[in-house]
Length: 102
Image (cartoon, rainbow, N blue to C red; front, side, top):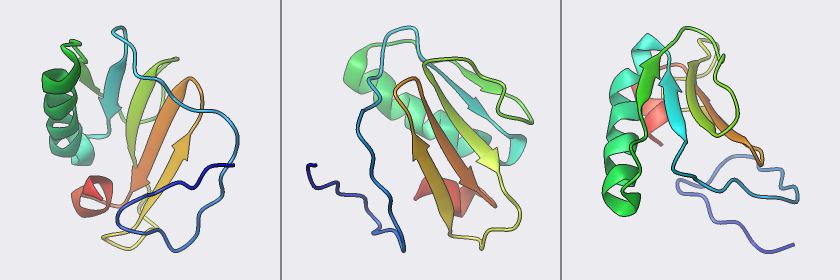
């Protein structure tokens, strides 16, 4: 399996086969506390891809396939995050914007 590089380096990482491929129909969803970070990522990805990448505010991870989700997990420390990448979606869980940004 190829080496994965994640910055900042996670405390723990479990790698699996597969990858998420960003497509033109992709969208982002964000919990209200994570909206600014989702907007920032969408802006960077729009410039790089030309894809529309709309951002929707939702309280729970209800996005369908081809979604990047920013969800709140209050039990995490301020700058911690949990990143889950599947072939059809990416989920970023954080207590607040600092963790989501990383």
